[in-house]
Amino acid sequence: MEHRLTRYSLDLGYSTNSKRRWRRYRLKYFAFFSILVFFLLTVQATSAAQPQEYFFQNLSEKEYETLAREEPVIRAVSNAKKISLTLSDEAADEIRNRISAIKPNYLTELMLSIAVKDNQEAAVLLNRVATALSDVEGYVKIPYWSKQQRTFYDLFDKMQVLGRTSIDGGESIDVLQHMEPFDDYKARYSYQQEKDSLRFSCSNVGEIVYSYRNFAAVASGDMLWELYAFRHGDRLEIYGIGAVKAFDFMGLFRDRLEPSFMGRVEAFFLHIAKKIQR
Image (tube, rainbow, N blue to C red):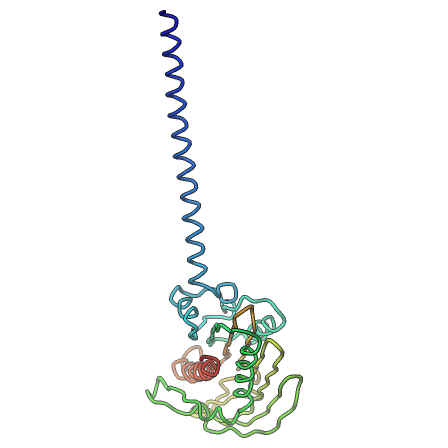
């Protein structure tokens, strides 16, 4: 009888210990899966808030939210190594290489992401942008806000077309143009449209002279405007950048030159963005 009780007590103790261990295991597994589910939900929410992170990096949470609302993001960049475009294809690589080559000290970017229903809608938007880019005389009418003068001016007050040359899917356009506070200077615009993309580029041909001090502020080819619109799935992605390597006497004239150059970049790209937005 005593032997049976002892054995029963041992069995009971074993059973109780097993149940305790099983409870601990269940708690550990529950905690692990809870953390895993929380992590996956967090990643999913972050991806939803930052839909274009793959193509545009180093943006703030607020800037990603602006992209998600299909509104343009305009931002200044300190140097060419910090530009936001991450896509790697022939056009994107060309933009990065061209910008890096001039070693700019003034840079401004545009980013915009628009949902498109089908190929037809994407084509309509790209055609609309190509039409706007080809109308170089119309650049004169683009409103430009002068931060220094606190008033609006025309982006350019002179735009004389010197010649147009057809290229695959677009044109190369040579112009003589004027913008304050600089002398007249020559520039070359070009755009090329393909099935699912559009590429635009502009550079100055010859020096840009700062009129009021009579010095060459920008050497030939050192002011670039680049734009790339491309289809990716059900979205149309737009990236633009304006870059200038300006001689500003080690910053002495920066407060005059930078707003004039970058303010115009911002005005031009916002004008193009409006052609794409609904």
